[in-house]
Length: 212
Image (cartoon, rainbow, N blue to C red):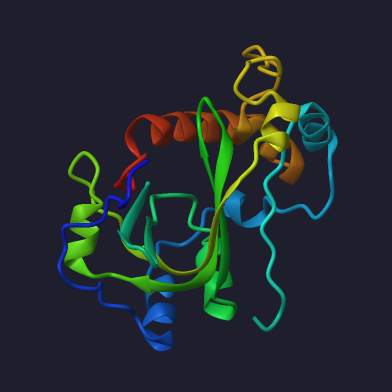
């Protein structure tokens, strides 16, 4: 059993943004796309209903109104903000409520690690450079000050048989995400085709940095 955890070679704590700086950072992201902005339809449609019916597990994180990963030290975790659709739901939530809960899963291992704490945002250049992938540094990092951390038993994943492949769905079970969201928000066939092409390009070229 190891008696220590791997931690960053950085000898200093990352610089954290204050509330105003964090708000300015979130505001500096590129505008959200039209489709991503309206994809929250506020109801379970046929696509999502089928997906939920087939899903063997769900991960839940909650917080009341009051209140790729790097272990920096025993009380601090950094989470890179990789490119997405710029809805920024997580970052905007953290501006209002810094409580955060995480469940870490490791393929093939049925036990999980659960962490809860308080989150702040950082654009510390030294930290972001350490978290670069394929030469692409994240725009910011979520720094979690750990309050709770524990290993959790395997019952949920054993019941879900998540790693066994029993619930794997063959390709083509669902239309592309561009078509499903297009159905939900009323895109034309031409717009769906355009969104499919843009999404495929983002999957190929935009995993670690926004496509320019």
